[in-house]
Image (cartoon, rainbow over all chains, first blue to last red; front, side):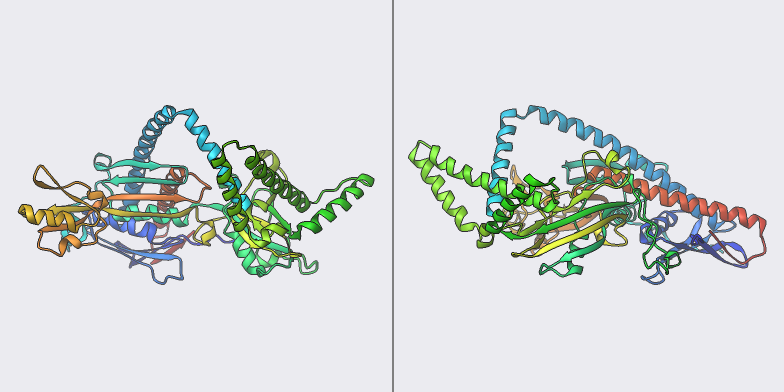
Length: 134
Length: 406
């Protein structure tokens, strides 16, 4: 079976300063993020993306760079930055989640066990009533 | 010649400052605060991130995280009022409580593999990629059911018992209902105080009125998601010793009348929300930007009191004679405060997002977010690999204009 194409690059006369990347099996999720990162890149003159048709699952990303920089290299750098950023988000989220769970754990111990058992009984009775109604 | 698009035009501006994106200093400005975490719902605030990234995570939560849902329904008998396709659609939407990490995607069936001589399709289904469920429910009158029960008991005394699943269920339900009724009766008799017995009688009357005619005379007139029975294939019994059930037991699938039956075999498969919403692991995942409210001019006491009144969400309050913004989080951007001449400036903080993730119960919400981050990273890395392969190829073929590759 043939693997489907993931990436096509179109340039004029092989000049890598300006290129259009056609990425298959991708949508706004990745394309808008890459565009955002490249827009803050000083070496990039122009960046934009489009979804040629909503029924086709692909995006076109256009990158035009300054002077002698390669657009492929800039694109690569953008993806690298995104990975770094995602790593720091992951770390931050893990830390905050652990902290939150610790605090929550302490709160749980303070609750009266009698109250918990009462709540359980009430829940059971409610379920019974529901079953009768059915 | 270089063309420079001014940064003000492409970046978001916050308080007159341009929001920069610096991947190396990202963690300095970035913070998360988890506000609420239950087993179904998580609410948290992300600061220092901008809309493209936040939206990417939201989109991945909706469409790219895999779950398991019923895909193929083989209908052996359906004499209910619900049409076959509607029943199959409803079964697909039931969330199944199983971790999709244990499963692989089932490969799509290419037509060439079908054996035309045999007429039977060679399926790609295996224990690695499919879950089997059985649903067999028959609705009977209670009196008829008792007769059937008696005759069955007689038979069973003579032969070996081969219990059908539906009869077992009907039996259990029958017993449950009987127990409940006995409990109510006992409850009313054993009360000593007059008040309590009165309340119980009243409750009994209410319940009797609420019981519909059907519920009194029929068994199994409602087909619930708890009636779905998992059939383990291959190793699945050892991988899932506790069994596999839908997330909630009381999802109504269909209603039956006397004599109607549903006998159906379902195959559940791994998939993503992109293909069909039944595979979506979240009820919804959404975010909003936090509001920024500013007072531009000093107001007299009278006017400030008026402002406090106009806000329906009680964002403003007068403390120590001064007008203050106390509950800016509650602001719903209704713009009532802009109608009068209060000098209020209303806006959205472009780099603070209040995220909430409501899970369907299959995967915990905190895990969902972590999976979304992981999937995003995978996308970036796989695209990076493709790019690197491209540059390698380019170095070997320098004369081609357009280059395609796998």
